[in-house]
Image 1 (spheres, one colour):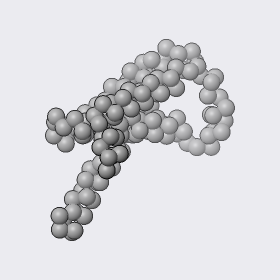
Image 2: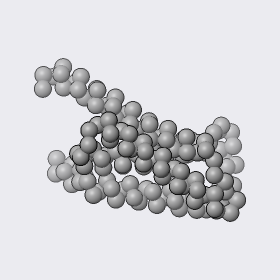
Image 3: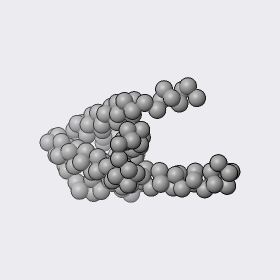
Image 4: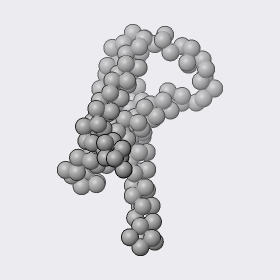
Length: 141
């Protein structure tokens, strides 16, 4: 229980979100040739780049979502929209940055994938809340 209290600190999740934004920035700061070997490995996978974007922004959005939940300043609906909005804004900024890197291009489908990663974590959160509520009702709590 003590470990959970230490992990559930607002600043902890904010720092994780900022650090993950740094990871995303570092990945998009590499020139196009840097990822040639990785592209060869996943050439069989359609939309491999989009899958990566969904994964990266799923993680980012989970950190942002937890931060906003612990902050407790707004209602749940606004938490969900804010989480998606952060992914949208950072995705757009990332694509703008990436368009200035040698050999890289800015693509709208990447922003769509970023937002989809955020939507996935928000939907997961809502389903988890619904499951917990049903479980609590059945157990008599």
